[in-house]
Each structure stands twice: as C-alpha cells, then as structure tokens.
Image (cartoon, one colour):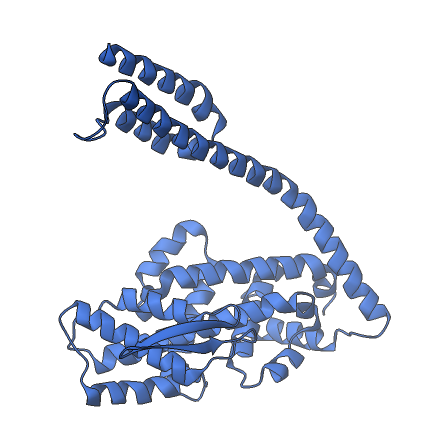
Length: 359
C-alpha cells in the first residue's frame, strides 16, 4: 500500500513539474528542475524517516517547499522580463530628458562646450582621424578611456572634474564610479605585483589574493571593515562616497589577507618581511602616478583595457590569455571595459550632434 501511494504521489509531482513548472519558468532553469525531480523520486529520506502516512506527508511537504520556491522564481523572472521589455522605452525617454536638460543649461549660459571641443579636436589629431580611426564612435570610445584614466591619476578630484568635457557632466556620477573602479583595480594590481616580487619564493594563490584585495578596496559607499587583532575586533572606516581611501587601514587589511593565504599553504610572514611589505604597499596604495610600480601597472592596465574596448566578445577570451599581471584581474578588467563602453555609448547617443559638429 505504501509503495503504491509513493508511486501515486510521484506521478502527481511529475505531472505538476512537467505540465506546469517547466512551461512557466525560464528555460534556463529547466535543467535544475529536472535534476530535482529525479532526486525527489529516488530519495529515501534516511533510515530514521517516518513510514506510512507520515512519510507521504514529509514527501508532500518537500514538494510544496520546492513549488513555493519555483513560484517565487517565476514571479521574479516575469517581472524582470517585463522590465527588460520596457528598458528600451525608458532608455529613449531618459536620453531625451538628459539631452533636453543639457541644451537648456547651454541656452541659459550655465554650461559651454569649449573643453569638449578642444578635447575632441585633440583626439582627432592624436589618433589621426580619419586615417587611424575611421569611425567617430570608436574614436569617442578611445577618448573616453583616455579621459577616465586621466581623471583617476589626478591628485585632486575637484581639479579632475573641472577638466572633464562638458558633455560628461550629464553623467558625472557614472564618471566618478568609473574613476573609483579604475583606481581600485590599479591599486589591486600594484599590491599584487609588490607582494609577488617580495614573496617570490612563497607559494601564494595570487588570483585568490587579487580577488580579496579588489573586493576590499572597492567600497562603493562609506562602510566599515573589521580586523581581528589579538582578542580585539577593530572596526574602522576604509572608504567613503568620494572614493577616498584610508591608506593605512587598507594596507593592514591587505597584509592580513596575504598572511591568511600564506598560512593556508603552510607559510608565514616574518616581522621584517611584513614591515618591508607594508612600507612598499603604503606608497603604492596612495595611487600616485609618480610611483614607479603604480605607474607601470597603470600603463599595462590601460593597454589591456584599450584592447578590450576595441575587440568583440569572441576575441576577448583570446586576448585575456595574452595578459600577464592583468590576467589575475581579467574578470574585473572585462567588467570595467563593458562599463566604459556602456558609458561612452550613452554619452555619444546623448551628445552625438555636438560631436559630429566638431571640425
């Protein structure tokens, strides 16, 4: 009787899954759903599981929990699909709105185009447009990277903003976000290069360390990081909304990450080595273009980002295989290149009529 009841419940569950859930959910989720069904039908619920009606009730509750999860997924997927279908309209309306605001500011005299015109003229000369770069959009992409990289090398955020093309001011928040991400990646790569050089003989997972450092240094908003020192839990501010960094605290946290990864591989960091690493990291962490390691890393990353922005998705993987130090941060670089392209495309869409009129 119990075996018959089990099979009956399995048939009911299989019917609901195949005739309802698989049809309603996103196709990308079908494989996991089918895998769950196979496991569900073969599950014995352990030796101590109840028998008889109680066992059937347990199986039925298990299915209901799964069905509720699937219902939430379907609702979420449906909502996302609806938002995506509206995104084109929202994007077009957003472009119209920002373009209108920008033009009104120009007419009222609050903003001009002097810096933008000089910037675009210099771009054409530097890249010998239309010979080396025949497409204005491509030229604009290169110029966007050049400008963002220049912004992140400026010691003064205020000075950097005043040197931006006026057209970039429509999306100033996004510019500063790109600035913050660029600086975070460059600091991370500088830390990795220094640690690799000083601790060359140690077994160290640089990819894991790079991921941890990058996550650590890239605070989007003011937030706290905790450090355990002895029996004390130290809570300190590491970053704020402007992208400023508490260099001393950040350096200590990077060293802690390094020591932990070394310990996981049976190594330790001697006091003298730690002091040497800290001194080197403190200077690199300041993010000055006059710092040799930071400057070298900046050039490498700029070259890789420029290549990533000029190639298609199929060529990206092949290009990443040719990276050296940058390969440790390839995912972060790919994401940054996509963000740069997204910003450049939107800026060009907003102000294409102004760029096309620059002689």
